[in-house]
Image (cartoon, rainbow, N blue to C red):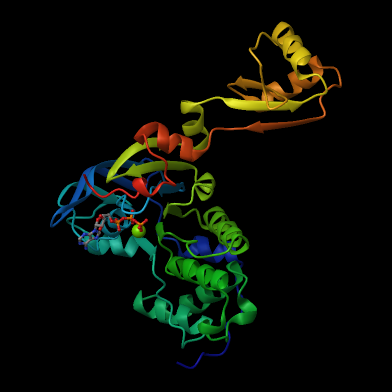
Length: 341
Ligand SMILES: Nc1ncnc2c1ncn2[C@@H]1O[C@H](COP(=O)(O)OP(=O)(O)OP(=O)(O)O)[C@@H](O)[C@H]1O
Ligand SMILES: [Mg+2]
């Protein structure tokens, strides 16, 4: 396919994104609602009674180990496979009775890449616009806006096969936004990327949400990435075992640890016990205080010890601790790659 004359940027990225977005539904309509969602394959209960409510404009994560049912859930949300039973609505449309309306309201980036390596960056975007019936003029504006959004404008004529892994993923994500969907599904958006490219992809996901107001539902089994989400559902063997903000999930299961290094840890532990009504312990030569809010406790400790603190760290329980709390297993352990028992 020959690229046409490069379109001129006749409107800003934000304006183009807003203009192309489908008319907003009343704010009370959830972006995604699932009630008792079940998907059974022969011999496998992949999703076993999932309840979800995702608000418009949220970045919502499904976190879980291999085989937890994340991709199966996304496939049902995209109306690609039918639920075995349960209710499912996307952008206010019932997925079972109005799959075409659902497909018009969503963008999807699958776990496996679907870019065409033999086409240029711009051609990949144009093919997508044609497939989604975006009118020609609007398609031009949208392609320009998407190229600017993903900072790939100078690579518009490069074959996709020549892009780095991070650039390809960014392109694929903005392509999912090209037709102005209300909800964007990203299945493992950063799998296989190095830490720098992962950070770039996240930067773009946040920017897209900010500028277009799109709701993003993504799946990941990277614990560190889950922190980018506004809220998370932790999935295990087809069920939601915990739901909340990353901070809320951590706070629910544990307390922060404040560790301070001083020259006389035993004496300083006693000072803190008297001054702050806490119960410090001394671990490996450091004074350790368990508390609900480590960031608030740290300055109080530093003040109470009157300059004796040499160094300090505050650590929260990890999301792996949260997963282990609810399942009795670590997400990192092979045993967590659960198949339905
Ligand atoms: N088409 C299918 N036919 C039979 N079983 C399937 C099918 N698709 C998925 N499954 C099974 O359903 C379960 C959930 O799979 P799914 O791909 O949804 O997991 P996932 O959470 O996306 O895992 P991963 O992190 O590895 O991508 C697995 O046991 C899988 O083998
Ligand atoms: Mg998957």
